[in-house]
Image (tube, rainbow, N blue to C red; front, side, top):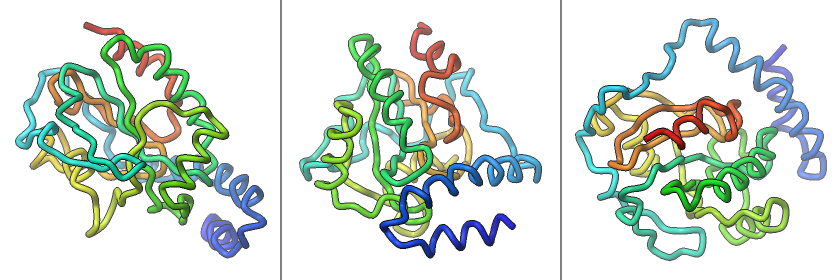
Length: 212
Protein backbone atom coordinates (compact mmCIF):
# COMPACT_ATOMS: atom_id res chain seq x y z
CA UNK A 1 0.00 0.00 0.00
CA UNK A 2 2.85 2.37 0.81
CA UNK A 3 4.42 1.65 -2.58
CA UNK A 4 1.18 2.53 -4.36
CA UNK A 5 0.90 5.84 -2.50
CA UNK A 6 4.53 6.73 -3.22
CA UNK A 7 4.12 5.94 -6.92
CA UNK A 8 0.93 8.03 -7.09
CA UNK A 9 2.67 10.93 -5.41
CA UNK A 10 5.56 10.79 -7.86
CA UNK A 11 3.22 10.79 -10.86
CA UNK A 12 1.26 13.84 -9.76
CA UNK A 13 1.65 16.97 -11.85
CA UNK A 14 3.27 20.11 -10.48
CA UNK A 15 -0.12 21.79 -10.01
CA UNK A 16 -1.03 19.02 -7.57
CA UNK A 17 2.11 19.57 -5.48
CA UNK A 18 0.30 20.62 -2.31
CA UNK A 19 -1.76 17.42 -2.38
CA UNK A 20 1.36 15.43 -3.16
CA UNK A 21 3.08 16.99 -0.14
CA UNK A 22 0.18 16.03 2.13
CA UNK A 23 0.39 12.39 0.96
CA UNK A 24 4.15 12.26 1.49
CA UNK A 25 3.85 13.91 4.89
CA UNK A 26 1.37 11.22 5.90
CA UNK A 27 3.32 8.21 4.65
CA UNK A 28 6.79 9.35 5.68
CA UNK A 29 6.42 8.52 9.40
CA UNK A 30 5.15 5.07 8.36
CA UNK A 31 8.22 4.53 6.18
CA UNK A 32 10.50 5.65 9.02
CA UNK A 33 8.71 3.42 11.52
CA UNK A 34 9.02 0.40 9.25
CA UNK A 35 12.75 1.06 8.94
CA UNK A 36 13.16 1.12 12.70
CA UNK A 37 11.03 -2.01 13.05
CA UNK A 38 13.40 -3.75 10.65
CA UNK A 39 16.13 -3.29 13.21
CA UNK A 40 18.21 -0.42 11.83
CA UNK A 41 20.67 0.72 14.47
CA UNK A 42 20.25 4.01 16.24
CA UNK A 43 22.87 6.70 15.76
CA UNK A 44 25.75 6.95 18.19
CA UNK A 45 26.56 9.85 20.49
CA UNK A 46 30.17 11.01 20.44
CA UNK A 47 30.58 11.21 24.22
CA UNK A 48 34.28 10.31 24.09
CA UNK A 49 35.22 13.08 21.65
CA UNK A 50 36.32 10.63 18.97
CA UNK A 51 38.53 12.56 16.58
CA UNK A 52 37.65 12.36 12.88
CA UNK A 53 40.14 10.86 10.46
CA UNK A 54 39.56 13.73 8.02
CA UNK A 55 39.25 17.44 8.77
CA UNK A 56 35.80 18.96 8.48
CA UNK A 57 37.40 22.38 8.16
CA UNK A 58 39.40 21.34 5.09
CA UNK A 59 36.19 20.79 3.10
CA UNK A 60 34.92 23.28 0.55
CA UNK A 61 31.49 24.40 -0.57
CA UNK A 62 29.69 27.07 -2.56
CA UNK A 63 26.96 29.18 -1.02
CA UNK A 64 23.56 29.58 -2.62
CA UNK A 65 24.82 32.66 -4.50
CA UNK A 66 27.63 30.66 -6.09
CA UNK A 67 30.40 32.15 -3.93
CA UNK A 68 33.03 30.09 -2.11
CA UNK A 69 32.02 29.39 1.49
CA UNK A 70 34.91 29.10 3.94
CA UNK A 71 34.06 26.09 6.11
CA UNK A 72 37.18 26.81 8.15
CA UNK A 73 35.37 29.97 9.34
CA UNK A 74 33.15 27.65 11.42
CA UNK A 75 36.00 26.76 13.80
CA UNK A 76 34.98 27.37 17.41
CA UNK A 77 31.24 27.11 16.63
CA UNK A 78 28.69 24.38 17.13
CA UNK A 79 27.24 23.53 13.72
CA UNK A 80 23.92 22.00 12.70
CA UNK A 81 23.99 20.80 9.09
CA UNK A 82 20.68 19.97 7.43
CA UNK A 83 19.65 18.86 3.95
CA UNK A 84 16.62 20.85 2.87
CA UNK A 85 13.83 20.67 0.28
CA UNK A 86 11.09 23.10 -0.73
CA UNK A 87 8.36 20.62 -1.64
CA UNK A 88 8.52 18.17 1.25
CA UNK A 89 6.04 17.52 4.03
CA UNK A 90 8.85 18.53 6.41
CA UNK A 91 9.55 21.84 4.64
CA UNK A 92 7.85 23.84 7.47
CA UNK A 93 10.87 22.92 9.59
CA UNK A 94 12.50 25.94 7.95
CA UNK A 95 10.48 28.02 10.42
CA UNK A 96 11.90 26.25 13.47
CA UNK A 97 15.40 26.23 11.99
CA UNK A 98 15.32 29.98 11.47
CA UNK A 99 13.96 30.58 14.98
CA UNK A 100 16.69 28.36 16.43
CA UNK A 101 19.36 30.22 14.48
CA UNK A 102 18.15 33.64 15.57
CA UNK A 103 17.98 32.52 19.21
CA UNK A 104 21.50 31.10 19.41
CA UNK A 105 23.54 32.62 16.56
CA UNK A 106 25.32 34.92 19.04
CA UNK A 107 26.26 31.91 21.18
CA UNK A 108 28.78 30.35 18.80
CA UNK A 109 26.10 28.36 16.98
CA UNK A 110 25.31 28.24 13.28
CA UNK A 111 23.00 26.33 10.95
CA UNK A 112 24.14 25.40 7.45
CA UNK A 113 21.46 24.37 4.96
CA UNK A 114 22.25 22.16 1.96
CA UNK A 115 19.37 21.97 -0.55
CA UNK A 116 19.20 18.53 -2.17
CA UNK A 117 16.91 16.85 -4.67
CA UNK A 118 17.63 13.24 -3.66
CA UNK A 119 14.25 12.34 -2.20
CA UNK A 120 11.31 12.09 -4.60
CA UNK A 121 12.49 15.19 -6.51
CA UNK A 122 11.29 17.47 -3.72
CA UNK A 123 13.90 20.16 -4.43
CA UNK A 124 13.68 20.74 -8.19
CA UNK A 125 14.45 24.47 -8.16
CA UNK A 126 17.57 26.39 -9.09
CA UNK A 127 19.69 28.01 -6.40
CA UNK A 128 18.01 31.33 -7.16
CA UNK A 129 14.53 29.85 -6.88
CA UNK A 130 15.42 28.11 -3.61
CA UNK A 131 16.87 31.30 -2.13
CA UNK A 132 13.74 33.25 -3.10
CA UNK A 133 11.47 30.55 -1.66
CA UNK A 134 13.32 30.47 1.66
CA UNK A 135 13.31 34.25 1.99
CA UNK A 136 9.71 34.75 0.92
CA UNK A 137 8.13 31.98 2.97
CA UNK A 138 10.36 31.62 6.03
CA UNK A 139 12.62 34.66 6.19
CA UNK A 140 15.68 32.41 6.25
CA UNK A 141 18.89 34.20 7.24
CA UNK A 142 21.10 31.25 8.21
CA UNK A 143 23.71 30.27 5.58
CA UNK A 144 22.32 28.28 2.68
CA UNK A 145 24.62 26.43 0.30
CA UNK A 146 24.33 25.67 -3.40
CA UNK A 147 22.17 22.63 -4.20
CA UNK A 148 24.07 19.36 -3.89
CA UNK A 149 23.57 15.60 -3.72
CA UNK A 150 23.62 13.92 -0.31
CA UNK A 151 23.55 10.32 -1.60
CA UNK A 152 25.00 8.19 -4.35
CA UNK A 153 28.04 8.51 -6.57
CA UNK A 154 27.73 12.29 -6.81
CA UNK A 155 27.53 12.80 -3.03
CA UNK A 156 29.07 16.12 -1.96
CA UNK A 157 32.35 15.89 0.02
CA UNK A 158 30.68 17.41 3.10
CA UNK A 159 28.21 14.53 3.16
CA UNK A 160 30.93 11.97 2.48
CA UNK A 161 32.50 13.24 5.69
CA UNK A 162 29.22 13.21 7.62
CA UNK A 163 28.19 9.70 6.53
CA UNK A 164 31.50 7.80 6.46
CA UNK A 165 33.18 6.26 9.49
CA UNK A 166 36.48 6.41 7.62
CA UNK A 167 36.21 10.22 7.60
CA UNK A 168 34.11 11.31 10.59
CA UNK A 169 35.58 8.74 12.99
CA UNK A 170 32.20 8.06 14.64
CA UNK A 171 29.96 5.96 12.42
CA UNK A 172 28.76 4.99 8.98
CA UNK A 173 25.25 6.30 8.38
CA UNK A 174 22.98 7.37 5.55
CA UNK A 175 20.74 10.33 4.91
CA UNK A 176 17.25 8.87 5.22
CA UNK A 177 15.15 11.84 4.10
CA UNK A 178 15.03 15.60 3.80
CA UNK A 179 15.83 17.58 6.96
CA UNK A 180 18.16 15.05 8.57
CA UNK A 181 20.38 16.93 11.00
CA UNK A 182 24.06 16.53 11.82
CA UNK A 183 25.52 18.09 14.95
CA UNK A 184 29.21 19.03 15.00
CA UNK A 185 31.04 20.50 17.96
CA UNK A 186 33.43 23.46 18.17
CA UNK A 187 36.31 21.27 16.99
CA UNK A 188 34.57 19.94 13.90
CA UNK A 189 33.85 16.55 15.50
CA UNK A 190 30.62 14.80 14.54
CA UNK A 191 28.57 14.52 17.73
CA UNK A 192 25.19 13.13 16.71
CA UNK A 193 22.91 12.42 13.77
CA UNK A 194 19.31 13.55 14.30
CA UNK A 195 16.26 12.06 12.54
CA UNK A 196 14.52 14.12 9.84
CA UNK A 197 11.26 14.05 11.80
CA UNK A 198 12.84 15.46 14.96
CA UNK A 199 12.03 19.16 15.08
CA UNK A 200 14.91 21.67 15.26
CA UNK A 201 13.62 22.95 18.61
CA UNK A 202 13.66 19.49 20.19
CA UNK A 203 14.99 19.61 23.79
CA UNK A 204 17.83 17.27 22.82
CA UNK A 205 19.14 19.82 20.32
CA UNK A 206 18.59 22.80 22.62
CA UNK A 207 20.43 21.05 25.46
CA UNK A 208 23.34 20.30 23.18
CA UNK A 209 23.59 23.92 22.00
CA UNK A 210 23.59 25.19 25.58
CA UNK A 211 26.03 22.61 26.93
CA UNK A 212 29.62 23.62 27.63
